[in-house]
Image (cartoon, rainbow, N blue to C red; front, top):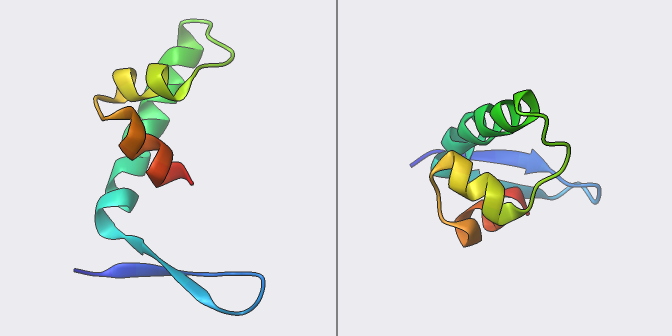
Length: 63
């Protein structure tokens, strides 16, 4: 399992799991689809439903 290291302001690094990184394009596609439908804002539940993931997982991924 590879973990992407993201530098923080204090110089330390935080790992981002591969699975989370792999879901980011899914979230982007879902957001683009919602935007094409004229949706300007959405809840995590709406985005999760459109992306086909659990809302709690989506919130954790984006935190």
